[in-house]
Length: 223
Length: 413
Image 1 (cartoon, rainbow over the protein chains, first blue to last red):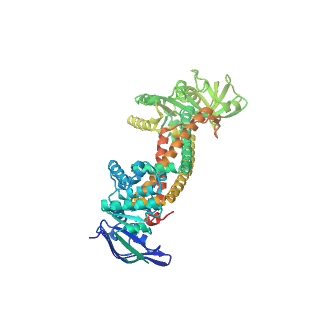
Image 2: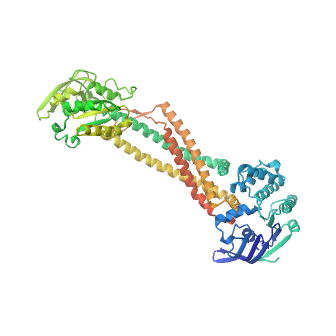
Image 3: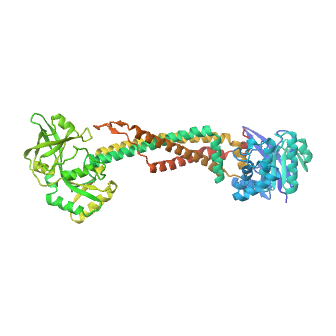
């Protein structure tokens, strides 16, 4: 069974009296430990597809399964639990909590799932070590560079050992040298941990490193 | 929960200027209600002492059954006879909380200096008992030198200040008191003035006289008393002892009715009610300030942290937790506001104690000191209330925050 299975998935948005079809009859399967990039022009539906895969949104029609669970059938609370247990997020603007240190930011997803403090700390320290930030655990986000912030975000996304990590243009706000390091880091973690990475990007260096490219245009997949 | 408290506290510090303004607004409101509550407490204590000791009402007054309704019309039938009041006083000695019980006879009539005359109301009291009532149960509450009957002479009494002025009386003079006896005959007696006192109330300061119990009995030509005053060891036992007395006297086959000091003192009930209304008014204003300040602060916080809300919700925080997170922040602001308010309140109390200001309330003949009590119980109650109120006020913006779609929240700049 695929980790993610989408069948005839549509996503429409109401813009006043107009209905915008962001995704149209999308069929997609994503297997465990894949390293997939979604690419296409702006407004093609990449972010909408990522939102659905990340279960922060639900399809207007069609069937979508994540780890065998139909997300349309899940309540808001159950989808929150699913996200917490199975999905990690890396954002373009890093989205770290400004009042928490790097360590506390990484611990946050574990504390959301009521993991005990000492376990959460141990796991967070290990993840920060994995991304090469063991020397910055007490730094707040505003005291870290963009690359370091994105590494913290990667550590945070991976700390719950999720089945899938969603990354929305993870290198868009980084310089080329830092982007390269971040891409290498994600690739390494994908290979070591067998975690599935799905991201949207325009970054050619990232596109050159992926296992699979999914092209989207006008809400339809042209793989 | 600890994590959410930490985040809430750090966000308050992060937005310290905005938080400080809200905390200060809550603190000022909190101190205002505490100060007014402390002032009401001092007024309450003052009025209570004034009624029990100053007016000489003691804690409880026992009347013969029917006196309150018909006593003025037909006093002869509703007076306690000497045997009755002596027996009642003897029975009351069995109660532990009773400090003393004493008979009294209130008489009315015309007072004259030979040239001018005016109406008077006189309490016929047992001098040594009256002195004890006026001193109160607190030995530090000593009455004024001229405010008690000390004499054992049955023709000596003290008159109120304005009455002495109207009739041009001074210590050492005598005043003629005229009244009708219980049988309706005119009677008059001379009273030697041994002191002049201030009743504390403009309404009574021009007609009150205190004179010996035997003098009042002679003027009314009776050996009875219209009431028995009961002084207790602690005013807080008033209502409990009232029930005990009624029960005890009923068991002895004596029909009577008992009034507490607050039932007899019209001034106490009216002033207390007035201050309660003012307190409620101030309380509502403060309530409004706290709610609006907290909602405003939390709404701004929600707007600024929209992307943060989207992020934590993407990581699996449920809507309810988002509400809790912001409500905790509101509660912490309320708690800090209460702490600041407590500091302002105690400082203001200290300042008032140091300056010792006085004022003359309406209807009172002498200036009284402005006293504000420090009430730890009230501080605790209002702190809990402020925290709860801020917590609830924060729920409104927090609910808005929790209901936003995650996608919209993440896209918020």
